[in-house]
Picture: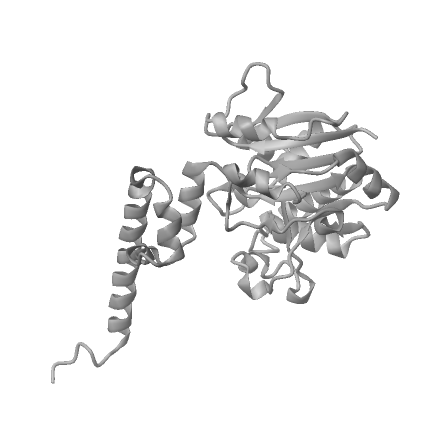
Length: 309
């Protein structure tokens, strides 16, 4: 079987290069760096197998951009269709984001998928849809009871599934432009829902190896990888700078840093202060502004507050 590993990124630096070099070496599969160079941050690097695309390349395929500003992030399935349009002869396309680490035998995995006639392997979310921040993007597009979420920083797609999903995106594009639907589904809900409603065979990634550290948060520091060799799939794996940014970003109450006994404080203090001073100050300022805004809104809603007695 002919397979390709697509290492997806939108930036290139020493950490991204280390991540690329961590890809499994004991495989006969092709490897490509599928690079989003829309902002000019990820041009081809000599001696590395880059396949460059920009947003214009994706839109020329007849695909709808949707209302979101970060179009490629919202439609993370688009680069897969683009690569398959250039190289349509692969049996399986193995999609791997730059912050994923794989500790498994990919060739054995593909053999298992092929023998089981599976078309898509990914993490299918078991969390309630009410917790999904993208759920409103499906209103008027799918019935709520039919919606499925698929999380695919690492996923495997058969040739058949790529063609199917691309055609479904084109169908939705037509409806959207004709105003028959008002919302543009986020990629995780689009892929999960369309695959579940089709005759495609979808498998849970954890059927093929441990993925106890595979989510959007918390991140895994790359120095900790030697302790996680029993994990087949790990995400997100980050360097120190990205680890701190992620930790601060997902901390809803950065003022917890002021509590020396908080986990947030202890995590940040394990790094040099200069590493996180700027991002932490920015987060604290944003939090302060949110609190002030919420306080003003609540006071304005209290009609009796501004009445002079």
